[in-house]
Length: 256
Length: 340
Image 1 (cartoon, rainbow over the protein chains, first blue to last red):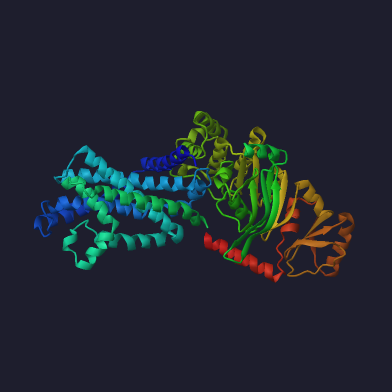
Image 2: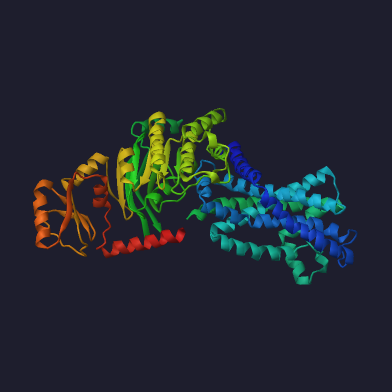
């Protein structure tokens, strides 16, 4: 396989998405509403009643990386619906009949999810600053958060494409997405610390990938202590490579 | 080095597409394509004809490596499609049955993105895109989103993609379906142009006999997943033989049993019948006598040389009396509906 061609195809598929977003940005702005509500209503309220043992950080500081991770998760986990829709209008057929390797198409699609995730990250940063949330604004930390957002979106959007190859319809993918996001979200450290969970949920939280993503973001945005960061990113990288590979093998099933 | 010398050896008799005993079985029992063998010569326009559900699209999908054959061999310019799918796809351009351009991009962007994915040389890319837009009459609308295009313009954009990417083989699945006569002519002209200018080999599926007659050098007619007949339009017309007598009746009659000595019924419904005879002139009195004896009034009677419609009727006729085969057809239709 020619690596140069492989990467250029992936970038082209992401470029295709970027161009579409440029023609119609509505979706991006609408997607900001939900995390904004979490931060402004949930975050501000719980911040003032000080009900959560969030250590040396205020609750709204604590929740900001969690909401960022959650909103990227939502984009990525429902990405399969977009792919099913593109199958229905013939775009997937067209993409898969080009000489580009299938893995490069899947990789490009997962990069497209990352693009949306990045925009989300920028908007949440802006929102947090507007609300006066104190986050570390070291350029390297911000860059690190972007890297985690990209990997995280790639990981879960390729998982979503993998599932879509078997589920095949939008309705089923909607159901799957909902069945996955809520447990992932609530059984993680996104909106409360693991220490307040019942013991059984603490175990679930330890195998929940979202916890690791939130942990990585928190270490960069709040604490500045990076000892877990290499493991977090390595785990994410392994999962991403696995899901992209599996989805590349199964994506043809969407057309059957 | 070894591979190259082998390629040169094959060149003399290399076929653009070669299918041998190609079979595709869906859901463990539906034979969408059943032991089909054919070869497409380089530079020809090859038509794959047949009624809905005959297996034409399935064959195209196998060639584009979107679907894999259950058994049999498929080679594109000598390369086994199951072994080197990416190499095979690099020689192909595919225009699916339903519109497949991205409606959320502009016409220009559609050409740009897919030329990149087909690895068109960067230096030639922009000039080719400009030429293709111009040739297909889309220059004025190149910067508009495709969702604002008409159906004919979308089809032209798909042909423009083929002009930009210049595949060695172009696969067109029902290219003129749903087009007005003017757009259809335009599409036909550009297909011929591709063949003449670039020597592109073209495989086209259609059930428009006029289109097949206009474009194709050779035609294969499929029926129930099998290849019924293969030849040039002229050969096929000749193979039907004799003359076709068309009888139109003034009133509808539910069933007419026709004596064999006059000819064979190719197609009939309650108000008309097409009869294939060896000698049309001699058969007309027999036909008219027969209807008079049955007390059925004839509205008109005409005699024609067979055209491709007649060829199609003869070879692709559904064998409705054959229980097993009609059952299989229903099953296949249900399946087609299911996947849609």
